Length: 68
Image 1 (cartoon, rainbow, N blue to C red):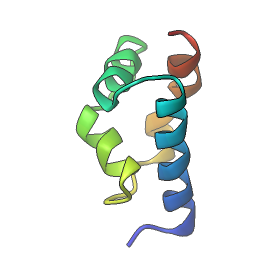
Image 2 (tube, rainbow, N blue to C red):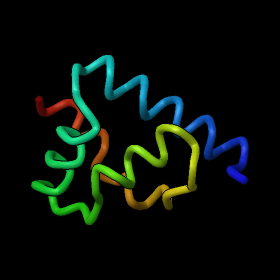
Image 3 (tube, one colour):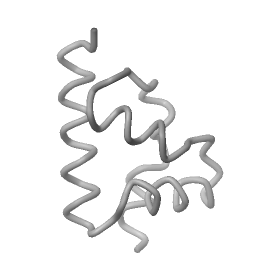
């Protein structure tokens, strides 16, 4: 069961991605270009709160969302 932090993170991730007009696939591809070891599936699972991806998996997220 995801923690309250995991749920909040998933909601924020989805909102930020959508605000920037990015798909889960697009965000994963951008993060991979920046060297992150992340998949579209991992982003999808975090966005719908099915699992708790380690926060460190998303360390490149701010750069990914701002460098569109």
